[in-house]
Length: 326
Image (cartoon, rainbow, N blue to C red; front, side, top):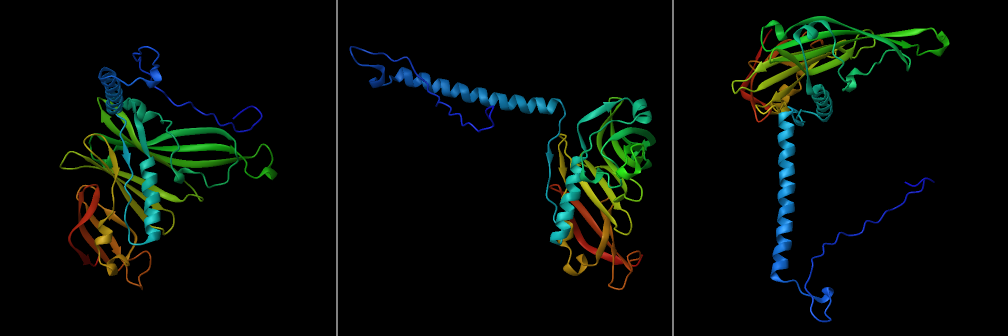
């Protein structure tokens, strides 16, 4: 772009490689034929460039491994309808965005007493309540810190309480008016070398305008040494809950888990599952409300129980599910 705003196309001259050629008499280099020594020299130069290129790629992979920056692979989950697939994709994408890359390492004392300033990274953290464009002040308190699920392990969780004061959204209230927004943030820590690494987090609004009621992470260690992260997100009102999973491989790579088992159910079963499924992270036993057409939202007349297995980053059905009266 030049200074008067007009686009200018810059033509790049083609790269030309010239070899020193031997000439005799009045014959010029343009008409001289390459000798076998020149051919060999050109082949060596080409091979050397390829070796350098491959070496740089290998060096990049080594550096990425050393700094512990895991690769994220967003696998597309499969559900029984186009609308459900779209919502599942959005939820799974939000959960992936919650990964802290690279992980933030702090002391245990700081994790218990001070909030970490982590990036806003997901559509569900947008503030829906009334607030102006200018943030006046923000305060954060650690209201909870302890083992995940109440069981002592190498994983801990903290809950933050955010109070943000904005200018008023309605200018008719005057320049001195203020709007206050209250949010909650969940931070998942992994204990490494006596320090805590923030691995995953999610921040969401609380109050009358909140979309989400709660976000609850769980951790399960797999028999093969890998780690399964479960994130349960429940909506306000009677919208139910949605559960997503991330699988960390032994090389540190996080992969989104497909919920393929739902497509393995009979069609008549899938239409009776409403308001979410609860999957135990450690046992992979799935429990879902099994609704009849006359059942109210609060109270399904039956429950569906299914045993799942994790294979190739997908949850698959094992055997036939059972139906019981709760």
